[in-house]
Image 1 (cartoon, rainbow, N blue to C red):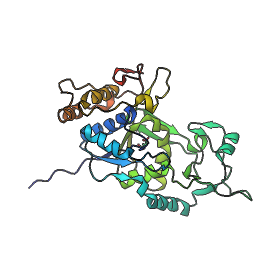
Image 2 (image 1 turned 60 degrees about the vertical axis):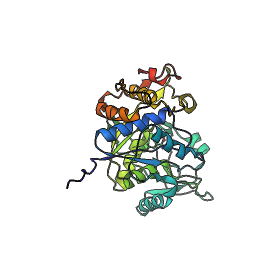
Image 3 (image 1 turned 60 degrees about the horizontal axis):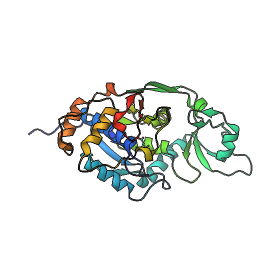
Length: 311
Ligand code: GLU
């Protein structure tokens, strides 16, 4: 008796439930799905509902239903970040035990006033590194960073190297409102889910060296990364979620999926009825070539995402 072989790897799609699936998040969904399926990998789903203030009730279910309508089926149970505080705290404790985490009393305003601009906002100037000044109380908890370069080879964007201490500074692992930071949660969850391939939007490219830095400290394996182009207008501004939102027509999902394929530099599937996702996916999977994904993409006509030209 033969059993099916174990999947080669594990990919994932991790939407934040701050609204319905829009063109930008659909690009990440389709890219990660095609890459996983083309490689014989599992494709997992995680709902990034870590940030309680940004979570819109009903949005997670709407995203799951939209994926089903599009014929995108995931493996295993969906992981919800809102259930994972214990795991994030355990990782934080592990870093604390090694004296890699320190309390910080600085407000956003104080940091903005005293910091130089970095690649992701002001570089934290290290004010609280040597302890809190008398009379100050803890707001956030920060990771002590180092000056060794942290780099990786992105399958779409090429080599990326950051000096985290100089370009970002000691970054927050637990926020002033008590919530665990995205950077910590994503690393803990990718390790928990055994993710080998992270395929997501290039708006997260600048987060990746921080995540790799955390993976090394926590002794987690390092996934491969591919950052897909994000939709920008002709002057390079990221398009808003409102501009990109396009209701998914359950009667005709294929034209929308084809516009995502074209955005990702892949050939559209021509011989496929507008409603026939069952015929669409095997052809799209067979045709997937990550080497054809452009690094950047422009959408000259925001209302028509399929008409974008490579930027
Ligand atoms: N939840 C994040 C977002 O929707 C993506 C996280 C990730 O892919 O690492 O922007």
